[in-house]
Length: 202
Image 1 (cartoon, helix red, strand yellow):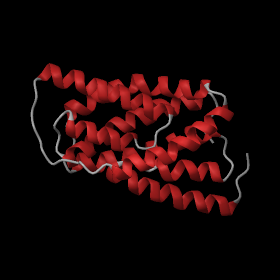
Image 2 (cartoon, helix red, strand yellow; image 1 turned 90 degrees about the horizontal axis):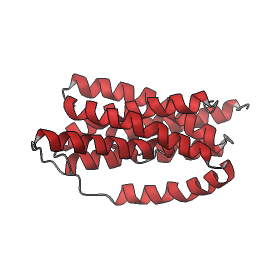
Image 3 (cartoon, helix red, strand yellow; image 1 turned 90 degrees about the vertical axis):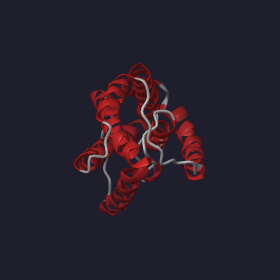
Image 4 (cartoon, rainbow, N blue to C red; image 1 turned 45 degrees about the vertical axis):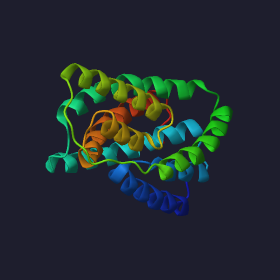
């Protein structure tokens, strides 16, 4: 499909803003996905194309958080493994849904997720250790669950993951944000490959 230059400028601005929001605490897809729809990109292709942009953004954010030593490597790697399993499943589920119905789902989901993200105020600062087995199981579960959601839809996945890493795994909020970027990167790449293999990346 053809996109006009003026539409590309709008997409550039929206993806820039979405990437900025994502680098802080997630939720950038609430800006970028509606922008793709607004210029006429079909739902499946919008989801796949969004994963490409997200992968670039999460890669650069991950590098920055890593340099600042604000990533829990153990949790990040285990959760990323879970996301690598869950994300392609979510992407395949999205592609299995007729595009007409997927449009309806996205029209309802975007504002609902936006409201949930904006109302969430209970980010904590605590940092605590937990038993190894519990940490491994919870990290894998968080990665799989949020990865599957991210592959299927995406907006708010980073915010939900940060909240879970903070509240369930006891990571401090900055370290939770940094760890989320690594897991999100794995999820985005896995979903991107899945969408790309089906020709749904513009």
